[in-house]
Amino acid sequence: MAKDPSPYPVDLVIDYPDHPLNRLTTAFRIILVIPIVIILMLVSGSTPSQHDEAFRAVYGAGGIIFLPALLMILFRGKYPRWWFDWNTALLGFSLRVSAYMAFLRDEYPSAEENQSVHLTIAYPDVKADLKRGLPIVKWFLAIPHYVVLIGLVIAVIVCSIIAWFAILFTGRYPRSLFNFVVGVLRWQTRIIAYAFLLTTDRYPPFKLLEAPGA
Image (cartoon, rainbow, N blue to C red; front, side, top):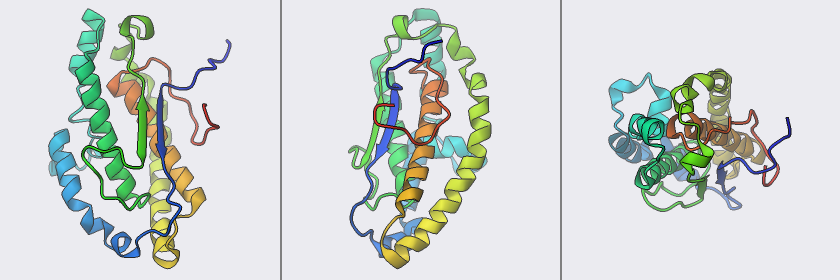
């Protein structure tokens, strides 16, 4: 089977900070992030009692319009644009919060502006790009990714701890660790878009780092 030369329709780029990061806000990040996390939880429909649903708490799956979109694709062959815009905006907001929590950026997460977190999701032509019955099983087909991500998320936590100390002592986020963490976030984002946002039928690639346009 020939390889599809077109770029994957979901991408995430986070600008590397080419300046010293703020040591003070880094030191107290766990406290400073609390207000915006509460706002994200309220918007996404998550609650503190759902702490065991880490995937939902971090990426706002509670607020994603999933089942209605699945039914609309299945029975009407449509994906309402405002549903797509809401899902994309909510995912972008949660990614900005994640980037702040992981010390990738100093800017306090905005509820509106993209800031230095660039999320790209192509709006699907449902009749041309999506198979009507596939959304029913996408969550199941993505199980291999879930298994791999368990280990990757643990690695991200370790990298974030190392980066926290590095920023406190040097003011810099080690570039290799930065690329790894962003790679994991990109991987997770593509799984969410495939299995829950239902914006693409192309199976997410198993890779962290990519060449431009990959």
